[in-house]
Amino acid sequence: MKLKPGATVLFQGDSITDANRDRDLKTPNEPAALGHGYVFHVSAELMRKYPEAELKIYDRGISGDKVFQLADRWQEDCLDIKPDVLSIMVGINDYWHLRTSGYGGTIEDYENSYDILLERTCAELPDVQLILSEPFLLEAGDFQPEHLEAFAAYRQAANRLAKKHNAIWVPYQQAFDDALEKAPGDYWTRDGVHPTLAGHMLMAKTWLNAVGL
Image 1 (cartoon, one colour):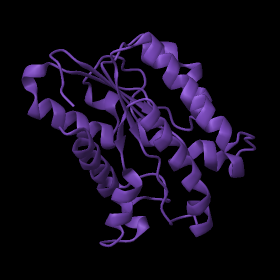
Image 2 (cartoon, rainbow, N blue to C red):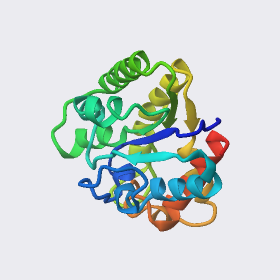
Image 3 (cartoon, helix red, strand yellow):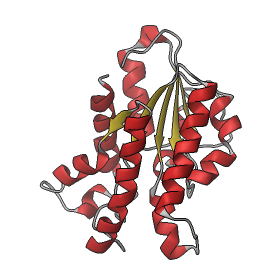
Image 4 (cartoon, rainbow, N blue to C red):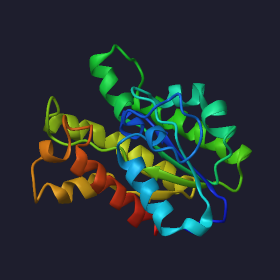
């Protein structure tokens, strides 16, 4: 992937992308507005490596979001920003809230809603470079092997959509699975989902490698 001069880069998703960002800050490239997770690390590296590009980088992840909640705020938090590069990671809440929050969505709802969101995006932003990041899950906290097996369907759905929409795919599950050879799941995530400092840096490096920057 190449970054054109003045490119706008937008990160979207749930709490992993949100990473306690200051939602009152709306201007690009503000450290507090980028959270303290992988988005911050990716942004810092892009701005260090490509100062001549004069990038404008935004984080609009919101903790707890599922696909339909992204869709509800998509005009303001994506289309109005007019990103040249759009990175999305969503899915864990679409799965886990089935078990914890009385959510009634299905895997079909997840894939169909995500597909519609991407179709809408490409129709309004035909030149956007899509990057779909694989939602991941590790055995830690409340998550057991049976959860990882069930969640695989969501990962597979996201991968199908990446292929359908010619998006760059960021293989986070494989990156974390490989990292488990060095340390257990609770080293890389606090609870199987939310990354530690090491986990966020692993995500940042995986993202940069996947997009070729």
